[in-house]
Image (cartoon, rainbow, N blue to C red; front, side):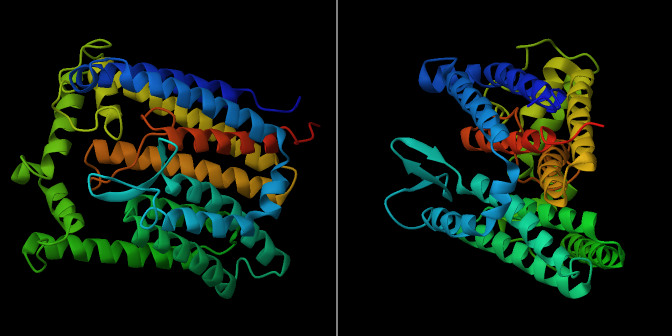
Length: 374
């Protein structure tokens, strides 16, 4: 399509290619020890990247209105896939977590499918309420957020994946923020959320609440002082900070990380940004952040010029998803927020995440290709 913004696929493919290089660098040592092949993870990721590019291309050819039209019908299959993580022969447990399904020797996370379903469904329900003139009224906001929260709650309770549930809820909140003319309800939500968070932190710090029996409360308490639990919950965070600090401004050089040698857990997954900073320095980390900012800016331009409300909101939904994952990932790695498992889009190792993120980019390209240039 002649109107497609080529900056978007160019930056996306570059980030995927860069991520593949960094995955090899971050995982080669442990891959050699565990699998006898230093390229074990990167070989898989190359296949994932190719599948993501194909998904992006196919989705760019399909009219985005098709996905909005059939959005409500995406919910039952998603709920079935989420349920299969707990029941049936396809459930696949990793480190005690029920987040995967394994079919024909390949595993994937239903949470990634739920995220893309949440985007199109939220866009559909907002457009429906916009037609009735209720989207920016309290009743309409309550209905839309209730549906998003129920979707997120099911994902959290069934798969015990709170980080993905927070992202699903965050996407819905971002979309509502865009369409509402009054921000007082969001100020109220933000104020209540901040008050609850500060109260919880105070209670944990003063001992009013004990984190025993809850790993999430333990992570929050460790976030306040990682060194107090240096061999437990604080270990990954401290090693990540050591990794970033030891890289300095320009880094140790590609492939020269020390922390990746069996020290920092999940070096090729959630913590890959710390390896980037160790090997390429703060400069390398800033360059990656600038690329994401540029990509989000191009999303913003597509949303601003979209041919209709659905296209604009769909682009904002994808923008919100990418932005939330980037912000949360970097915030965790730098200990700005408590530790939670969120991958860096296009860069971290993982098949389901990168393939469905590629499909989301394809939907944005579908919107972009239908913009009438003046």
